[in-house]
Image (cartoon, rainbow, N blue to C red):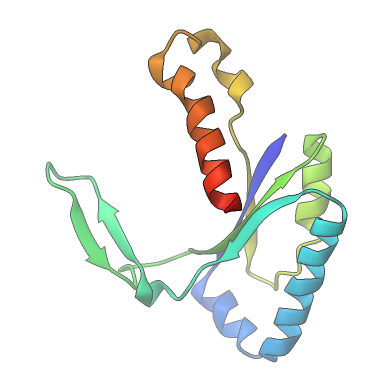
Length: 143
């Protein structure tokens, strides 16, 4: 089963992390990533740049509205993610609990859909095309 671990921080937890030497955070995250890779569960993962470099597309109106970051009132920011593959949900929970995040931070864990989730839609054109699209993307990512 694949899971996405979504790192979420508040303004307060980000300020608290600024009190820790960046190299200490870098080393803790590096060691965590290394343990995920050595265990063979990490498929991908990325940190996200500052919210000031991002934007939001709001679909509340008929025409989508684009707003530059930072995003108005923020209670939580997504700061990065990992995609891991584990045999069980419990194993995903254990990996999530080992993540070296500080007080105030949260890690949301969501299962990623798999092909078997769409078995009853096998006649759907896009479900049928998805396998070929995934193979094409895999080839592109390897080159």
